[in-house]
Image 1 (cartoon, rainbow, N blue to C red):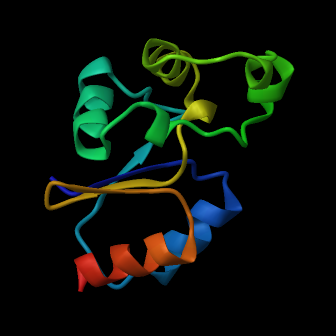
Image 2 (cartoon, helix red, strand yellow):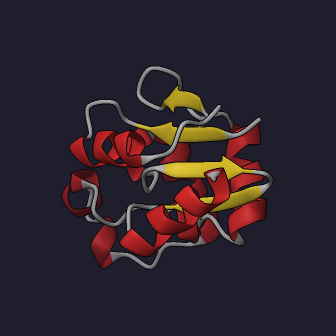
Amino acid sequence: MNTVYYLPSCDTCRKILKSLPENDLSLRDIKQESITENELETMRKLAGSYEALFSRKAQLYKSLGLKDQVLTEADYKKHILEHYTFLSRPVFIIDDKIYIGNSAKNVEAVIKALS
């Protein structure tokens, strides 16, 4: 199933979703329904690492002092599972390919994949 993991309260996520062509994406609010370990493992396999899924823009990243630490893959996994804000958003899984984040290049690839 094609899925987007996002936050409905995120203006950027809403803007991206609005820009997409008509689609059959399953919308997954990561604040209301936490990511499971199995889902995160699937994402990791597609992305190549937990680090690729990790957001350094999260306010908790700085407030927890994580920016001053050397994080391992296990650390990235733990933090993403503990708090939704550590997942780089939005994350699209379309036809067994993953698209992470909100860069223009990424959004363009998502639109192409959905067309």
